[in-house]
Image (cartoon, rainbow, N blue to C red):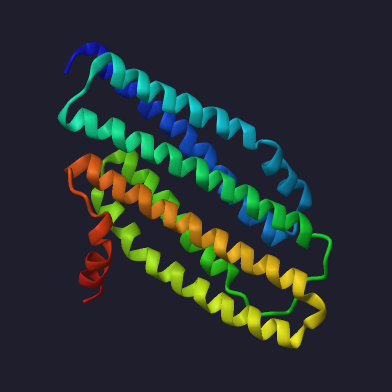
Length: 226
């Protein structure tokens, strides 16, 4: 591999690492803002969203420049293609963190409802998936990436349970419909974070092994469950 291309790929890796660290940080902040009903922290996440957007654009431009100047092939080309996709996934996760932060700001003005939402369990799973997908990206450990694929079903299951709890909550607390809808939104946003983490894991497997698992992830999860 030409030295110039090695330097460009190393630069893209470092840029992705920096973006991933900031996105992961904001996802944790968003969960904390909900748990603590912290409007100040929620507003901080919202106010810093443009920083993530700028970083995402910088990574994309660097990838496109490397494609144009070096015309990489084989594993180098797979890396650039995967980096472009992962870059987009990370920006979307940051957007979801902002959405959760907005819900935190609203809920901070309301009395806490006594409804058995499994928010901590769902948040922990989604954040663990994000952490493992990023760790697999920077370590090249596809075992971690495969673990993320398996975990996605668990988050989906908790999200479905949340719908049932919200319906029950509306019957018991009709005066709190607005709050319940916000809780439902939080659940959906966490489920989407898990989906994007899964997409990153699938891209890591493609980047590392050259294997496309996106349309076979369900078969893999079933085999792991045996």
